[in-house]
Length: 135
Image 1 (cartoon, helix red, strand yellow):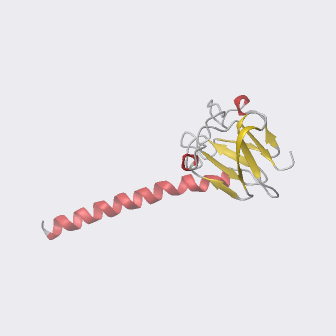
Image 2 (cartoon, one colour):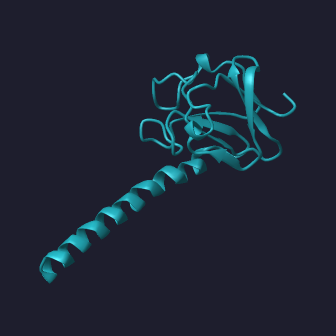
Image 3 (cartoon, helix red, strand yellow):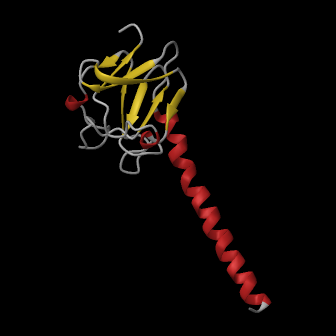
């Protein structure tokens, strides 16, 4: 392989790697779309729904049944569809439940924490209600 071919190949690989990093940044920044004091869910991993960070469902006390909600700016139903969550609450832990009205198993996140990919902990597309502590 000539020096020119190696240089071109190296530039192509570097360009692809830089593109992947550049494309990943907006998805992670989507946690900033979650309003202060709220907990949010998104339909896809990386804090997006249909490639939109602003397409989330948020609450400040609780949502007893996600089947009554759709993601902002979409027609996608929120029940059993969350793939990422973030607790942008100011005071307490948020708990999400498998079933409506605090039913079934639950998973919790402390304030200012979340999970960009729920498939890593086995709860992807399984959340049906969410509550802040005390509600």
